[in-house]
Amino acid sequence: MMAATGLKEQLNGLVNSMLREGLLDEQFTQLQMLQDSSNPGFVAEVVALFCDDSERILTELTELLDQVAVDFQKVDAYVHQLKGSSSSVGAQQVKLSCIEFRHYCEDNDREGCIRALQVVRHEYYNLRAKFETMVQLDQRILAYESKQ
Image (cartoon, rainbow, N blue to C red; front, side, top):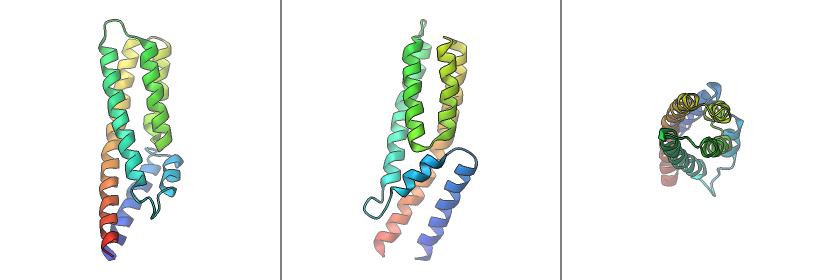
């Protein structure tokens, strides 16, 4: 039982530091509240879907911005999509960098979009690394608790 308690403290510490740093906002806390014994892997599932979605969108954005003639409406649509999914998981920094990115889309500013994509990618990978640690801790806690 002690091991699970220690892991829970680690997990809470990680999430709290992510909230303090502004990587996550209260929307993530709302998601955590939806996880219970009937749905123990809920947060991990949502995080995995968010990551898969984000990877796909970042790939699309990279390809679109590599074009000679950039379709800024298409770029903006993808950024809008990423902003929405970031918002729904509480990925605050990713969401904020998407809002910034959309300004460059509106201005049809290719260089601005390329720089904004680098910022979004940086924020996303920073968050993803912490999400991976979080999910691993969560899985270890579930493994301990299922042995009880």
